[in-house]
Amino acid sequence: MFEQAFKSIDDALRKEAGCTTELDYTEQSSWILFLKYLNDLEVERETRAELEGKPYRFIIDDEHRWSRWAAPKKADGSLDRDNALTGDDLIAYVNDQLFPYLRGFKQRASSPQTIEYKIGQIFGEIKPKFNSGYNLRDVLEFTDELRFGSVVEKHEMSDLYEVKIKRMGNAGRNGGEYYTPRPLIRAMIQVVKPRIGETVYDGAVGSAGFLCEGFEYLSRQAKSTADLDTLQKRTFSGVEKKSLAYVIGIMNMILHGIEAPDIVHDNTLGRSFSDIQPRDQKDVILANPPFGGSERREIQQNFPIRTSETAYLFLQHFMKMLKPGGRAAVVIKNTFLSNGDAAALRKELISTCNLHTVLDCPQGTFQGAGVKTVVLFFDKGAPTRETWYYQLDPGRSLGKTTALTDADFEEFVRLQATRHVFEKSWIVKVGDIHPVSFDMSVKNPNREETVAYRDPKDIIEEMIALDAESAEILQTIRGML
Image (cartoon, one colour):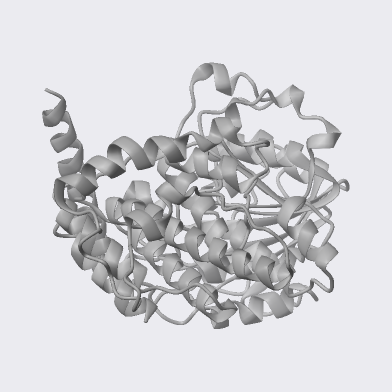
């Protein structure tokens, strides 16, 4: 049901002149899916309240409820087309009434830690892009077919939404910043092993994959309503700079069952480094900060080790945000381990944290990114004495149809616990690291190093994506002239 409905929604969006990219499709279908999900959630709560003999007050008022404007029904449950807005009337209602009403929740909410406040944040960041009320009517009707009543239905829908985010991530460079392969995230979580009662933080939220997967992992540990309340209100937090990623991340968390995500729309790196106090620090940090970017000089000067590389600034931020005894897993370009500009940062990392594991990811882990990455696993408090390296080798070239799976990480997760040494893993002692360069690059002593060439198909796909991105930028510029 969900898969066919999602396909129909995407087909309708492709006919819409106001939506031209995969990012647009995800953005516009997201706010509609969110409102339908919220409607079903409220109906479920109302039914539960009635059974308990309690009153229920709807979050969305009657005038703006899904059943009034998006899918009014006849007595037999069929769509009441006589009262269903369409065409220009529907566009005018959405632009001039619905969105202003939803944006107003931010001012009307009693606290930032409420779903009402999050509604206001979401619709304060997003803009409706439909030009045709007839296309929008089609999308609404396809969306109305979806049901979110059972746990199974909610899980299926959140899985398919993840697929949609993945497609957005693979559509181009900017979208790719929002998506980290979920099998990699799950492996990182299995190594770090967060526990209920600990705080989990991601300062580069993107589509919130780390926080959503962390919630799934910890939910299986929950044994009481108090545990569930802790997961909902006192466990997960994060920051995201980009508007679209921020909106997608919040909605993804809500669709995964986190009702009022503690996500802030801000530049993580803009926060004063010296202002981070023990009360701000977290037990667990899971993140894939953007690499290849750069920050303004005044932001660089905020950090003890100044650098123009965004990922290196994020790493310093994570080291400061981690509680003593806390655990972190951070994705970063593999050049961090050898780059001369990062020598001081490597020294600081192994001096103040136990960098116990480095996971070397294969080429193609991040589709379209064209870079090799590693995952740094470290605990804060004691210096590093030795680091266990593992080279992930799935035995195949990675691409859209041959992406990494959970099975590819099973050996790594199993052997990491014992730090087993064999042909794909080895240990480097701190005393063997060069005292000036602090070079910690991946050099497997058990294998003869070979040059890894990229698959021509991956190169062509990246060129096509870059061409499309350039064309979109030019189109935007022309529209401004």
